[in-house]
Image (cartoon, rainbow, N blue to C red):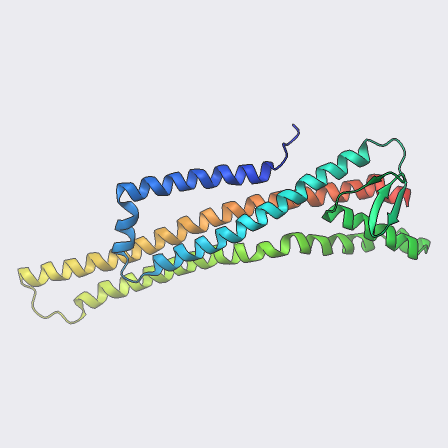
Length: 247
């Protein structure tokens, strides 16, 4: 597998965002966006759009944080694997290799620090050989790393539900346009068709906005989860192969 560049997660997200901004600008210039917002009488499309803007800002913050963690993980991996012999020690809350190199502040360094503390304070052989203890510890770090992504998946699902709610509102508007009609002359039919098209537009535009924003949100948080999985897999591999045998 080719070596990934530093901040490749942030750069990938930036390319994704730039393409999205270009598509939105083109749609606005072509009049498609204004047509959608004007045609949605329920204004649910505006709510979905505001939700997307909020969750995109949250995603941008997480992208920067996870990208830094990913860079630090690669640095720790290169530092550990480049040493022929390894000796880990705790110095002022930081992990030191061979009494010379200090691991950069990161999730993987905190995990190794906890392993050192755990095996230094408890030398019970049965406990040391129990892999479930280490599994529980890595699950704690997995929750720290990926727990904040749950809001993104929740909002992505919420957008779809809001789109479906807009669909129901649109159908209600369509039915309301013919509910009290008693005279079906030409002018009345024209008025009915106009109101029905308004209801249909509301139903379709809100569904469209919900689906598109949900897909875009899910794509961003999929990128985040993939990067988080890479960090966790590297942490598990280094701890099992290089760290635990030396403790």
